[in-house]
Length: 434
Ligand SMILES: NC(=O)c1ccc[n+]([C@@H]2O[C@H](COP(=O)([O-])OP(=O)(O)OC[C@H]3O[C@@H](n4cnc5c(N)ncnc54)[C@H](O)[C@@H]3O)[C@@H](O)[C@H]2O)c1
Image 1 (cartoon, helix red, strand yellow):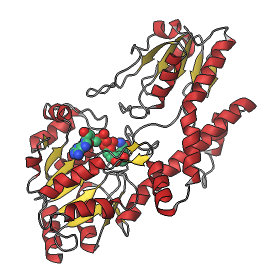
Image 2 (cartoon, helix red, strand yellow):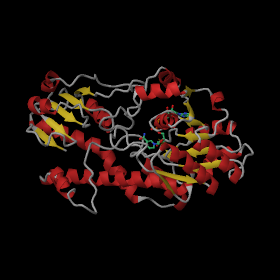
Image 3 (cartoon, helix red, strand yellow):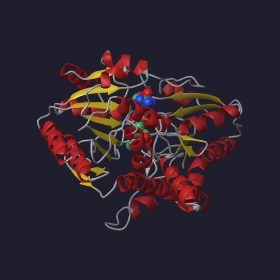
Image 4 (tube, protein in one colour):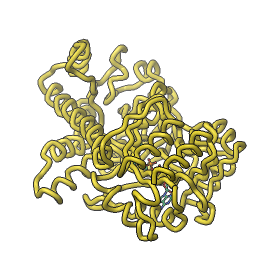
């Protein structure tokens, strides 16, 4: 086994390795781009033919991967594909496929399917790494048996590990390369191979003892954020009723140089991580220990309630102007789940829009980050955020603090504003903050 590990480490060091990345989404495409940039031969496998066609045509659908980077990778030989035959003869397979929740239960069918395709072409001396977010135990209990069905054994024939992805879509400071990467292996040789592979991609790797620890790291990080966002969201609702400016209080608390981390309120949580990952942990605790992870349940409860709270605030503000939500013209600013991204998954903005439509409001929306591929069906017209649109609305609600927001125009021309992100705090405007 040491010989096989030495041989793989040498191929990785010399960039002689063939890397396949299963899933070319928000996580997989950046991994594929980076693997290509450092000199590996890269196959980007995805079951979605539309995505594969877009990539082959040089069109990226991921905010953090620009078309120039994709063009450079294609020139280096990066090969997007949905043909399993292209997976043959891989040295490293990285699995970055979705792990959704279905009725509160983790759905690992994509991971199982991707691991099955990898198993079909698994060779002695190869490395498989799972990056999808999942409950602790998945790498050993689910991926390993699928790979060992081939007759090859981990620890004897091939290497296996887990490394959580930490990307923060749209973050201009911290990306795949400069964010330390937690890595793990099911045994010592596996850990060594995982370290050498990611050592080629990122500035710093952080090894941990077991894949279960590495799986827990990701869930701990996201549960920490989920719980703290819920804390400020709940405080924001009470502070508003008490007539206290929560935003000023958060600013002041953030001056404490130790023991405090800044989180701000908003209309709820979205994306593929925060609304989902903590539930993996509570599911695992419930299934294995029979207990309830109360922090997660409470945070879910608070954060899931935020779109309702936003709509209640809108109705109250309209009422103050003698208007009902029904037939009021409402301009919604921002539909994606966070600033600067075209990722719409689980976006709380969509929940707010649905509730306003159900109340009979005339809703129009502005969103500067429309995804080029897979645009969701929208129940409202998407309009530019012009002075005319702003002035024609009975109420403007800021749901996402996109950098393109015309804040001066909103402050000057909107009849009434609900700012759920605190973007207008430095300006005089008619309306209120969350
Ligand atoms: N988006 C994030 O910010 C983020 C951050 C950290 C971790 N993660 C985790 O990474 C994983 C992937 O998330 P994502 O955001 O990249 O998802 P995504 O939906 O953007 O991309 C997943 C891709 O996998 C493809 N796919 C589905 N089944 C497949 C299969 N069997 N074989 C090959 N491809 C398949 C899909 O077509 C899609 O293109 C999830 O577990 C997620 O929780 C996401």
